[in-house]
Image (tube, rainbow, N blue to C red; front, top):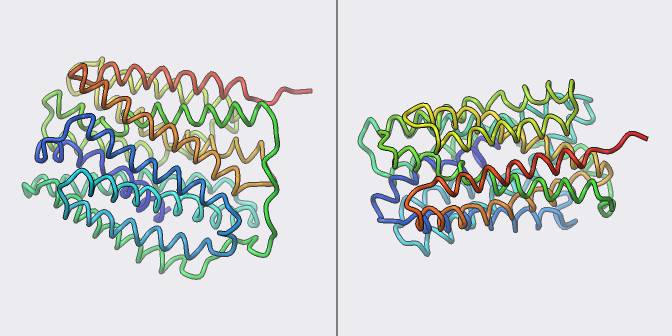
Length: 371
């Protein structure tokens, strides 16, 4: 949980609350912001594809810790640079690091939970993303009170990530996957349901990332103060922390595919509210509904993929993550260009909502039919 708080909640998503300050201080356009975000997700995509290879077998622990250390260092480097070229390279490498942590830590945690027959605890692992978002938001709120600039946000985020790394080393320093002696995983099975889920997961990555990248910028454009910006992002993190547990409980009652589709529909409402509902209510609704769904959707999608490819858990995890990453690469670029052309984030958010709706429908249609 702490590992995901560092690599995902801070390493990936701290960019969102820091972004408005970067745009103002460095005169970045929405398109520039989209390219920087997409560089991170390109690194995430390549990292996920690389993690699918057999070369990583037996090296999961080393790669996971390396990814966490890189996350801390790269966050600090963001605060020491001011050029687009540097931002693109640093965020690309940060994406690579976060993918390694995501895939290899999950391999370690899930294998031990499977041996212990405690699959119900997977939700706590993914809750770390929300924990990291909330922690980084609290940090930035303190920095706002001290009148610190965007660079200080990155430097202190790097320091917070380093503290998280130390905690993970102390708690899981000698942990390795429970099936480390197991051989190579087989190829993924062929079937329409699996293909549909991979496509749906990619559309989800495209849809959620627009609001996850630009929500605080939307608040800034609407005249919200810096404290309110941090509050909105903290609300998203706090809503995200228990969301996976809650959605897993619901999935136990109505099924994984129905829960995934329902979560997509709720996220559509949140994404739309961010630009349609006026005043403070819109961003707050968006924060609650985005935070309350996107982490859970990440977990539900992976769980559905593992269900469709039970003999290749690491391979399907990596392929699903790669599809997700591809959607994330395209999303910020398209949204940034639309926002720059239109002068606001309305069209970009509507585009994201349509992608999320399509993701839910396709995932629903992928449900295995009863004989």
